Length: 603
Image (cartoon, rainbow, N blue to C red; front, side, top):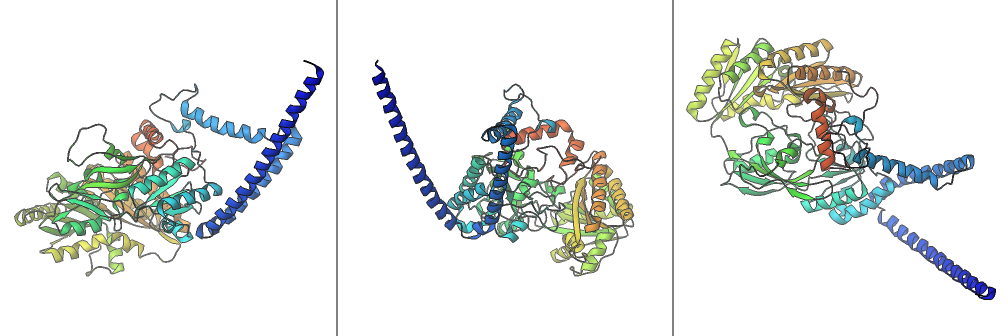
């Protein structure tokens, strides 16, 4: 080929290159104009509460990016490293490290059955303001703008409560509270969060005590308050289908019209979703069992938005893994419960209450041991110590004055003849245990009056607070029934020695009791140490750190001592399997990354 032809070819190629550059430049300009137009429209759409609550954070983010760019340029001049290589290397390092941790050192999926904390990889969430703003528009399309709130008071109330034992930190708050109205809407919200790696905390009732709904990773809070319907009652089958925001008290009011009731009875205000999450119980647990005994099936939205149903409605089934019980007590860490099929039972036609007092807490606890050992079919056995009875009298919320001594409350149910016989048996056993008084209700009205003291336990202690610096720490443990008297007596002595005011109250028929401790800001560490010794004492007696409150944040570091590192490591593996991105209620039950120095109390 002649030089002239070669030159012509090079010239033609150069012209085409210049033309392509002009087209690319024009497209870039148009793209920037289009982006600017879209950005302006987006800003206008965020003029409501979202834009106001996030604009300052966006500005701070931009300032941080500018400072980072300056530092990057300085680093480039100092080392001669190309500017684009710095973020590239950082990104590859973070993402590569996360995948290596997930797949093992060989690059293959890990074949280990458990995940020790030392091998856990911290979650990689995205809570940048730009990400949350973009997600807000997606959430609005799913649930409607009226069902999204970023009001400061709502964010605070959805991250903790005055009766929770976990002192919520200012940063433990969600970016927004979202209220879906159906399982499908929950699924839509979770798909958005999964795509954008936004952490999620579930909220149902807000009565939990161990920091269960503190938003430790920010993100969003899914509030189920709109999902509050009793969907279907199968009276002949003795089951009912409900949504998660149905309160147990409301449910029992509806069931009473059909002469039915749902036995689990935790604190006032508790809702089915939270009750499933914590595996709660209450005063009826001795006779009827705990929450896990009354759930037949669950509809659950998984972390990626997948909807599953754990079982059908029959009372028994041996079909596959027991997924229903897997989710009960999981505290929203494995999936979000959007529907529950619950067992119900005929309402007892004859209920009576008896109350007896004792000189010491040990004698009262020994009476419980005698009654349980004799096999008397009691509906409930509750203990209130002398401090608790004194608080009830001081609060003045009951219609009578009570003897300020360790007291047992018994509830009987059955036929009139059987109830009369059981009361007589308990009275005899109480007398042998050195009871000083014994009275029983002759009708429902008297029974309600006697039982009213038990209902006022927590509120009467809270009424002793003097100002906003006073707090109540409510916690529970459970031990084998033979060790009940020992642990209650030792715990009372420990509280008295500490100088704090603390009451003992509990469902002692199954070895479960609570301490309600009053303390102020200066005394937090003192109260913490009392609770620590109480939990340690229970575990060393082959008991549990929590009988019905759940683990949450406060008691997660006691699990290795209670069930062993291997079992906790297996729970961590389950968490990874159900929720690989660790979006759901991160940090609850098991740690997902190593604690800071001094964060865990010495055993």
